[in-house]
Amino acid sequence: MSNKPKILYVDDEEINRHLFKINLSKDYSVLTASNGAEGLDILKSNQEIKLVVSDMKMSVMNGMDFIKEAKKLYPNLPFFLLTGFDITPQINEAINSQLIHAHLKKPFNIDEIKSAFHKVLD
Image (cartoon, rainbow, N blue to C red; front, side, top):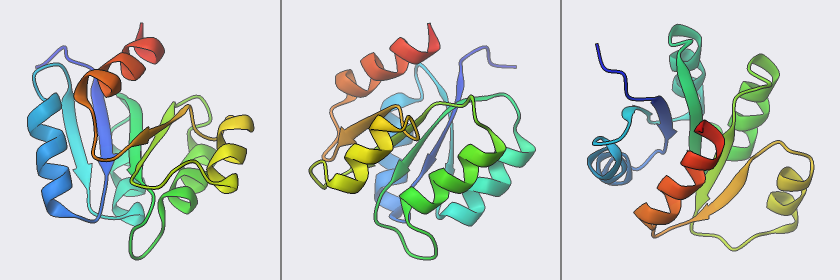
C-alpha cells in the first residue's frame, strides 16, 4: 500500500494523461480518467483522493462542468484546472468563487504543479 497522496487527472487526450502520470508518479499515486463522467465514477469509488486536476476542453463533459458536478459531491476537495487557455472570465469566476483552487497552464510545468499541490496538501 502506497502512502503517496492519491490524485485524479481528467483529460480526454491519452498522451496528456500518460505524461502527467509519468511526471508525477514519483510523488503521487495518480489515477486518470478520459472524461468527466469517468472522473465522477473514479471519485465515487476512491474516497482517499486528495485533489483533482482537470483539462478544460474535453468531449462528453468539459472540465468546468465536470468540476461543478464533482464539487457538489465533494465540496472540500481541491480542484485544479489545467488548460492551454489563458485565464478567461469563466476561469476567473471559478477561481473567485472557489470552484477551482488554481488555474495551471499547458504545456505543464512540473515544478509549478508540484508547488501548487504541496500548498493544498500540506
